[in-house]
Length: 221
Image (cartoon, rainbow, N blue to C red; front, side):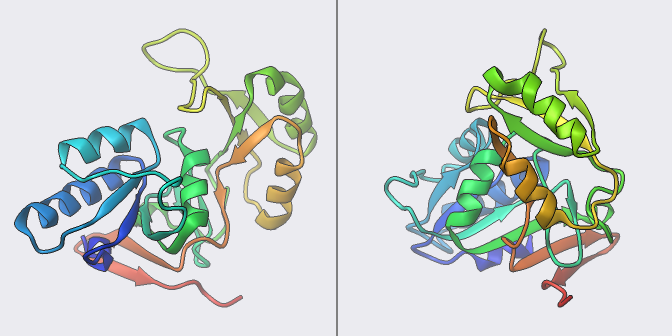
């Protein structure tokens, strides 16, 4: 995977979450095992990425030890031409966003079907919410023009609980013409811990299509 080629010896790497990033972590582990790169440390963004990194024998660190991360590689549920993205299908967006904001370079890897002209087209926006605030947050988000559902788990009763002990609501706004305005409105709601909108973080994306991989830079408005 071409994104892994950006990782160099001595780097601290943000390890995203999700099915696509599993392959990134495996490839990075292979490079370390072969000695093609060394002295690489990973900053995991979820319990899943911790487990995958341990299996791949990637040494781990924290943002306390390395508050600035050299490079982050993560997936996306949806991404537009400006490399703004919606994430959080796996419920790890708060930690993913903290790591993304700490990266010198942040790269998104995604399948071609995740590319869209307008964020929110056929895609809900996950919002991580403190359990104490779920009902008032839900009502406030609905007033912004969204249909809202509390995310519940399969294989367990009740709401999905994130690694941070919070709940997730999935908000369906439809196509979002001004994601920056919406992000500001959501973040201003008491009890919202993070949204799944990742705006202005990525400098580069690799989009896999049938038989090829596209390398994308943010389009100028």
